[in-house]
Amino acid sequence: MSIINQNSEAFLHEYLNNASPTGFEVSGQRLWLEYLKPYIDEWGSDNYGSVYGIINPGQDYRVVIEGHADEISWFVHYITDDGFIYVVRNGGSDHIIAPSKKVNIHTPQGIVKGVFGWPAIHVRKGEDAKLSPKLDNIFIDVGAKDKKEVLEMGIHVGCVITFEDELAKLNARYYVGRALDNRMGGFCIAEVARMLQENKVQLPFSLYIVNAVQEEVGLRGATMIAETIKPHVAIVTDVTHDTHTPLLNKIKEGDVKSGKGPTVTYAPAVHNKLLQLIVNTAEEHDIPLQREAASRSTGTDTDAFAYSNGGVPSALISLPLRYMHTTVEIAHLDDVESGFRLIYHTLQKIEAGMSFKYL
Image (cartoon, rainbow, N blue to C red; front, side, top):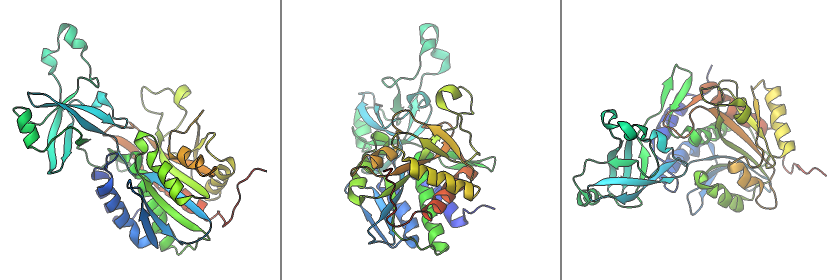
């Protein structure tokens, strides 16, 4: 039986359907915070929009559980005299999938609808048959007759652009949509707060539930908020690649499959004692778990927390995801629930003042 209730499910759909592009996360952060408020004692935010709720505030020992709030997007870069719009990335947006996608252009006056256009197959002949999407040839059509009309719509260089896609269910066992990376992590840590409150769990430390901004452009939000909170322990959530789909190489990418549980990562930034605590917790509570390794950095906010404040014991719990950085990212419902159950039970193994030093 699912432990995601109807209220949680409604929040998840509202949260995922809302746009939260890197640098412009505020509307998503408001939704997330309003859902979180009944389960926390205090909340705060920083100058760039990272938001956190606190359970049992004021304790000397501080533990963070974290996800990142931002999604990949585009910026308006250049408007032609004919009224077509060229773009640059905001984060790791995939230009290959752009043609034929509907988009929302966020302007001071509101949303303007557009599409990524592309020449019809009938006219792509000879050398043109080799034409493929590139960063310098994809463009947006808003139905304007010229540049003047584009500007009159409120569109200007620097307006942010997001794809128009909504969260759905696939075969009753998968979530599918855009921005599961990593607002599904934000959902998971919010569900941990809900479970702690509903089960009246008393933690011996201050728990910070953090939804950080700007991960997609270099872990920037986590870097800032780690200096603000100065945690003693950090457990970070993110996504990883389900490598059991076509065109992926398990030798290169590892062996991870949706539906078999979240993953833990072995990496220099991941603290081995904290990692073992998580693994032991999974075994004790029969929570399925997969393993993967990162040769240098994890590429997630784990790195930002781990290397802050003289070194913070940190670990990474990831959700297997198909088709990352597309509009059809897919995650298994069981993995989502296993992820926040694992964090919920791990928190109850951490003691105030707990030392993770090796020597």
